[in-house]
Image 1 (cartoon, rainbow, N blue to C red):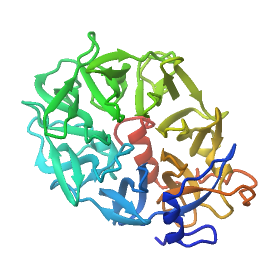
Image 2 (tube, rainbow, N blue to C red):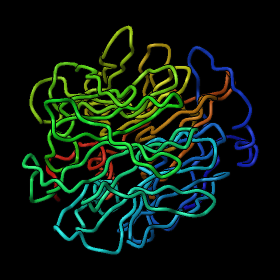
Image 3 (spheres, rainbow, N blue to C red):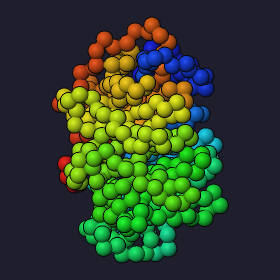
Image 4 (cartoon, rainbow, N blue to C red):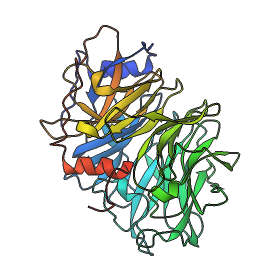
Length: 424
């Protein structure tokens, strides 16, 4: 797969520009550059920090395995694994000090036969039965993050500029709220401190499990609280929560009692994510924003679509994610100046179709996953704001709904809860 530079500038010029502040117009337009690959046909850029480090996951040849990936100057660098076949950086990582966190399988099978939370985020998107652990990567070294005593697996989602890593980790409690065909042991939200100490973040008093999904530089942590279930959302996200000084606060909902999942928090304390709009575990969710002043409110979705998610936010309050449904299947979206826009209406002519947006940095660079109907490849991308007056698409590009490869569709569906069933 060759990186396609879609406006008249070199890749080097583009990535030098990452360090230069961009003054956004009322509505920005974007040039798109595809990111390098590791041999497969699909990859997803899920985070970008303010140094221009892009992180996510890229498939290996054959699209049966995926590896946590760092893109520097557009080139893909494999971060490796902890001994198993798969790894991933599945959530936005904002750390500017060279620390990346994610998840990796071990070579060992889980002694209890569990299928922990990691499997939906890998290429095959099917349970593997392996132990999976969160990792901390820095200076070329990947280090496993331990579970609580008695547990086997852990999961790392985010890290702040203080080096505090958050996620969730099993303990030794056999939780009766778990679905034993997938999960047996209880898991709790955790902060792994820079010195290696583990701090448990408890669920709300009525719940048994918790999981942390993001942390800001003030040490404020967001995540979920609920029942164990299969450890992949749904009932485990009965409540969206904010931990302040280790105490969980219920963030409320937008009408539902499941899939209440924060995905990011900025240093202003603004939280985004997705949540059900009606009671029940069926996937009827929409993107939300939460503020101290306004509480939780829906960000909506594109007219005619079924669901939406907010995946990333910057310090300016610009939010990115995706909308799903209607004739477009998946499409990257941007919430800017209180306006929801399909990003495919903002790109320069000749751009690939943008399936999802994973994160946005301070300068307005947006990363995510694109798609080429001609090659059936779905590479990671970075979109850069262009000066006013630059020609853009006259209309939203035709959706590749009929030709989107099964492996691409399945990977997106699994990690965002869109699958109609858990197994193929």
